[in-house]
Image (cartoon, rainbow, N blue to C red; front, side, top):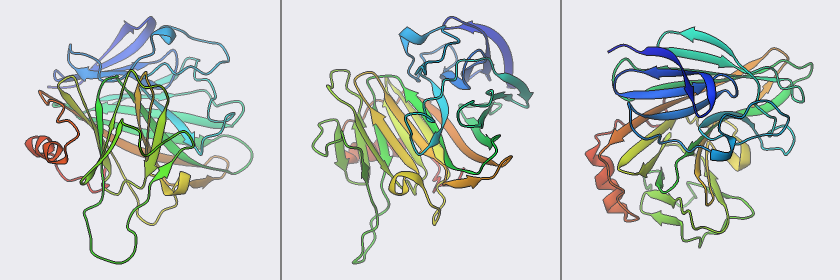
Length: 307
């Protein structure tokens, strides 16, 4: 199969781009974003979360969640992070996909670009996130790739293989509203498991240096895997996090980050991800042995932080 590229209406937005290869499809908004608003099996359910109240909206100065996959820059700040992405994008065709470029953010001078390509066959999606400093002064930031997942699933985040020694070998960053005794959160063997609960009363967020370079999400009989490149020895935001996750009653976010960089005027930083989607994979529950068996059945290649 080859990758097709079609203009469609989706969620109330006209002129969306649908990329498809016969196995999976991805829908990209061009009126707002850059966003991947849909990813799923061809003709199947969207594995990404959408915000019903934001569907089809454009323009305005308020920031909207929309859902899907977006590009931010870290560290988080109430002004610079929440710049609206409500205007039309510049669209460029590339082999197997498209590149979407946002107008320069007026308050930050940062230009965001997202390249999305599909493999000719199978479920793999390749994403290249690019931030460029179009301002007049150097800016320190990290690229922050955030994927909103549909509610009701269970996230799995790997921990490093156990090693002997007297010194600590990992860290965990917690946000002020997060609690280690939250019933959604389970530390299970080699994995951290986080359940999205539509009945939850408050949010939870945590982060870590994800040296394994991947995380996954079981939901509705499918398994979504998101891979990124962890660069040992680099300086990351938020006490050294290359991966963060956030959940509330509406959704769960899977977030990968690049190392921090100082961008001189005209300078850019890139951050890559790879997605895969597997069908007929039931939620293994919170038991580490069941999680290990479910992952082993998929015959996943070892990523080890390389994309």
